[in-house]
Image (cartoon, rainbow, N blue to C red; front, side, top):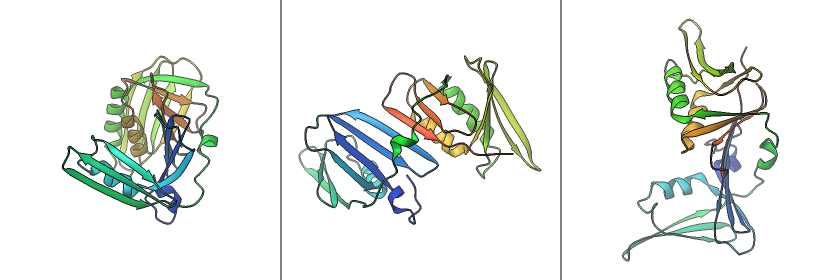
Length: 225
C-alpha cells in the first residue's frame, strides 16, 4: 500500500468477504498485490478498507500466530487478540471511506508468455545487480534465447549484468523495473518457482507462484531510453 497520506484511500487495504472466500488487495499505483483464501463465511458480502497502520500493528503484535476475532461495524473494525487464557488485547481502528481502484480491471485477463523462473536464483541476481546503486535506478530484464540477462547501467559509475537460464524461446522481451519493487514481489512468493507473466515491454507484469493460484503481484514497468 501507499504511505503517501495525500492519497488516503491507497494507504488502506481492501478486504472483501463473500461466498466462503476472503480477498485482500493493496496498491500504491505502481504495483498491486492480491490474495484470495477460502474461509468459512456465510454472512452478507463485506467490502471494507482498513488503514495500513492497523494491520501493521496487528502483524507486529505477539498475537500474530494466535486466534484473532474480527468485528466490523459501520465505520470501524476491531481485532480481539488472545494468547492462552490470561492474555487478551484489542486493536480498534476506523475504516477508510472512498472508492478503492477497480483492481480487477488492472489485472490482465490474457497472458501471452508465462516464464517459469527459480525464485532464489532470480532473487540473488536482482539483489547483486541492484546493490551497485542506492537510488532505485531501474533494473533491466532482457529475456530471449533461453536466458534472462539482468542488468543495470549507472552513468559515470558503470554497469553490471548477469544472466540465468530459463525455458523460453519466444519473442524477445525487454522490460525495466524499480529494483526494490521487483525484489518485494519476488520475496512475497513462497514457492520454489515463480511464474513471470508478461505481454509486452511496457505492459504490467504479473508475478505469481508456480503451483498456487491465490496470490498475484502486479508490477508496472519503468520506461527507459
